[in-house]
Length: 105
Image (cartoon, rainbow, N blue to C red; front, side, top):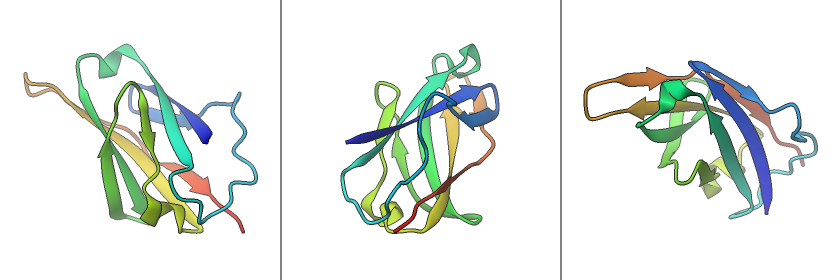
């Protein structure tokens, strides 16, 4: 299993510079997972990870213990974007910017 690490600082979502995002091969199922470091802006939120091709959402999964698996239909793509959406019961909502992921092979 390979873990892609991201940092969500408020609405900014960036790739963790300590993580290698090179040579990701498309087509591997149940192999890629995403891990997120979340700033206090995300505290108390239920967080969904949206996987997009251009502006169209391909799939979305709930974040559990700061992690989620990349859905199989997304792993087939040459490239995709991810973004986070967080909501709390009190009506608070936060949405991150998109982050681009390129896969090869």
